[in-house]
Image (cartoon, rainbow, N blue to C red; front, side, top):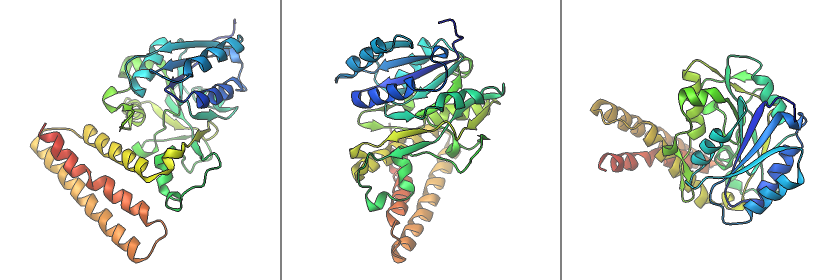
Length: 311
């Protein structure tokens, strides 16, 4: 393999072996020269047949640069950070094991880095419900809580807002930026039973604040498989609580003025969301549950912030 190595594709794996197999098949089908990228699976304590799937894939694809490593510290950020340590290429790309990239995904991401000012790039994640019936209450904005991410741009576009930043289900970063700015924060890690978020968007925000461009690349799209349990309301409450807890972590500051500011902010937004909910119910909006979840996710920050302060 004399071709220059351009990209390291890191895939954290945890107990979704069948999804991992489909993800690897999609990566192997990339239109770019296979000698120009490597695949690194980071097994994060899987107890199913993940290892068998990974090693079989490597054996059946001798033309691909492929490595399978173990990371015993539980959590997606720990797994991604281990992958960063193992990576050899200048551009590091991230996929989730339930992400199915289109055939031009990698080429589209790498083209973004032709601009030397680009530090991070990512593309849309389109939910694949796998022929499952979508509940009526999940027809609106709440799909963003079940692995959906897309922006209204048809051309590569620089993004600068937290809510626009790419997700690690389809994300690429210059490797040197992890050396300069640090790796993914493990205090924002997502582990089974504790669904924190924003490790990826916080990383993208750090890159933006350091003066680098963060790009949205519409052509770098993936299909994100939606598990059956994500179509249930208990899962949304887990995600919603995780988002609220993440907000508390990101705004933690024991300076009295800052504490008052965030309590005032939470109370103000919760009040606004409550009145939006009331109006939605009175108007019998079909998607009133969207407004309820917005209210609940803001309101729950108040007791969570009190709990954080008394620890």
